[in-house]
Amino acid sequence: MPSGMPPCLIRGVRSVDFVVTNLDEAARFYETVWNLDPVAVGDDSRFFRGTAGYHHVLGLHRGAQPAVKRIVFDVADRQAADALHRAVTAAGAKSTTPAVLTTPGGGYGFGCKDPDGRNLAFVCEAADHADTADRPDRPRKIAHLNLNARDFDASLAFFTGALGFRVIDDNAPLWFLHCANSDHSSIVLAKTGLPTLNHVAFEMPDFDSVMRGMGRMKDNGYPIEWGPGRHGPGDNVFAYFCGPDEVPLEYTAEVLQIDDSYQPRPSTYWKFAPGRSDQWGITQPRSARYYRVQRLFGYSSDGDRLG
Image 1 (cartoon, rainbow, N blue to C red):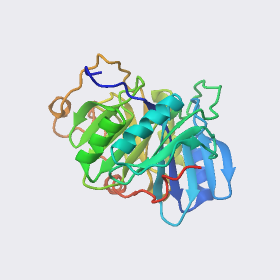
Image 2 (spheres, helix red, strand yellow):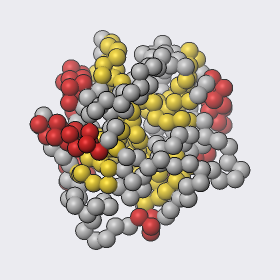
Image 3 (cartoon, rainbow, N blue to C red):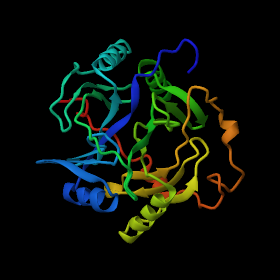
């Protein structure tokens, strides 16, 4: 960590909530194809866990327009949550008051809106799981979220200033942000001029699980939109798909593990040879469909309200 910077209080992405147009169809997909386990059910919502400890990594909510409802970050304790609340308030963000939560998993935390209108939340003391062993072909957790930015400078300043993320690499138009864990990055900001979702990456336990996941998706009518391949920044293997409502999804594995000694590298370091879109040089460029849906999903207006 650069000298003089306070430590980041965020320990990773805890979960993401989607608004879906067909709740039953989406729930079947994430359980039987994407391979998450259901943990909670509401009248108009479903929640799913990975194999890591978080109570849930995905929430689905019935609605007329597909969107990202909320992005939830994990923090260690109430002291960290309260400190983050002071930081986002000082940065001018609209936020709720930290409180005990009644949402699935419970805990203590608050929600806010960032400069691009994304709904963020910060949660501790949730009812997390003790069983955290890897299971073949099952996602562990959300590895990272790639977020398109309309006001890139304001978004980057908010994530690095108020939230304490560190820019760990850049490969324009992408900036990779590291928090208080060993993963290369947990947030990626894309300088696209749009306030939308680029994609959500779910971490698999190994490369074979990614490959078998590709086969399972194809078997169920979800073609591979990009991959398999290995990225530059993060060194992770990848495969990309369009899920229900065409939401952009990634299976990934072998994410680079780093510590404070890691030296960020600029875009010039990461450029591939002409005709390549990954380290290996074997995969075709992403599909036209995937390029389209990487700019499609906006943010729900009410996701900052936690209960």
